[in-house]
Image 1 (tube, rainbow, N blue to C red):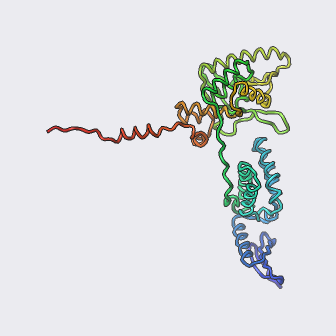
Image 2 (cartoon, rainbow, N blue to C red):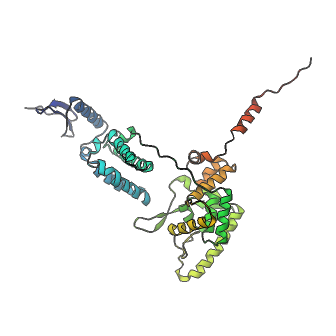
Length: 381
């Protein structure tokens, strides 16, 4: 009669057909692994016993990557924004599951993931897309480790390709002035929106989420505390910024306050024209009936305005880059620029815009020479 193995005990033996079988008992149930070599069986057994010591349970050994990923997406949905969960779901179903979905979760090894990255690059997928796959993998496996389904994150041992940074596009000082002049001349409805985007560096969603109650005219401050985002199932909703640093106060100049006052008066005329159709939500930049603005309509006018002004075909988001470049190139301290942009750390601002900071190597060299060169004192006998 064969000896009954105790919990967490393992064994290896050779089968009649020449293959090797490794077995381990977990929670009263048996896990099996068959390989062509004894070494593979030993590696599997060692890995499995290590995982058991780190909290592996039997149920997690029987879950496929596909099932785990689908359950993970459901579990994180309440904590993520609609666009984020939509992107994670698309990445999972389009790139991950077709290749690795049938694998058992605990059988996923770094070489499987690395091979997927390499194949995607070889097949011409953008490096940004591969980076997104890496982000989804990493976050999902962090969750698996917390649950005890994995002893360690296999994605930690991979080397995903680094995306190549595209050349940043923005308007210089003369182009920014030209853009606003043309917008003002054409009586563009979004003139104030463009002006505020360049003056503050705010994100598009933050601008469209502004309410008049956020403006303190006496202090000359604007409180950023929400943003307009797409809602699951269609439409838009106002949500809080992604990070704590996104909630911030931005000082405004007197001319900016004047532009906002003129915009307020123009909006009052729109309210009168809309009559009973106006839905007052106190939005600073609403549609013509007071509801949240569809940014696709604004984008169409924005592109047309750039063409009329004879300027490069940039994105609306590039007005944020324009604001950052104007501030940095005119001596505004990095930490102030970072706070106005709503970055969590000045290091983020430095990573993104560091190359825009004017080089002052020559000035530094001259200053250090002056500080370190001793003053010659002539001593008379």
